[in-house]
Image (cartoon, rainbow, N blue to C red):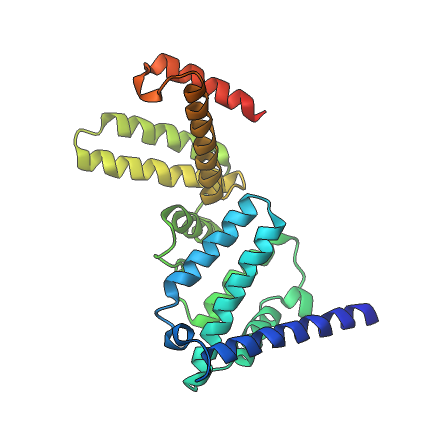
Length: 263
């Protein structure tokens, strides 16, 4: 217990030192660029830093993850400092808000509520949010600004929480086959686009039923494609060839070699 308290005190002291640095940068004697920043001007940077955290996680690089989490923390501190200067709220207010939210939405930890597992925890969380914000629809609160796959996954999960869901993954897979047939038969570009969207949406359902996040799955597949294609290019260059000069059958052979090199 004493060791845990000592670590907490050390972390608090180090965070306080970082807060002092941010305040110095924003001060009249600080950095001109930092002083010019606003909530809006830092919006794109926050998004960029969040994606760099995801990249570090995908690469399983703890050194890079530590650095990128620091960059996200800097964005939080900058936004809070800008708000405090305007008299809107302080960093302490931010900490209070999230602490109170965590306690309120974990009654199974800080209260007497009993839960059977993670699925019930998520249902309770959504129910508590709906009550707090006065939401009328089960879909309220899902941001349309999310990447399309994540938006679909979030909407489907909300609908599933009120029982609108396939009984099992086989139902979703049957729907995939149906959507494939409809895509093949679509007569116009507009119809093909609509049917292709329906197919993607149904595939998100399959992923959800299998416990897979579709955004993560696609990122993984895209990363593997990039790595394999670069390997093909390197091998072709070593052979004195160019991919653009090859027929598809030969390209497939290079692709298979690149796949085997991953193992």
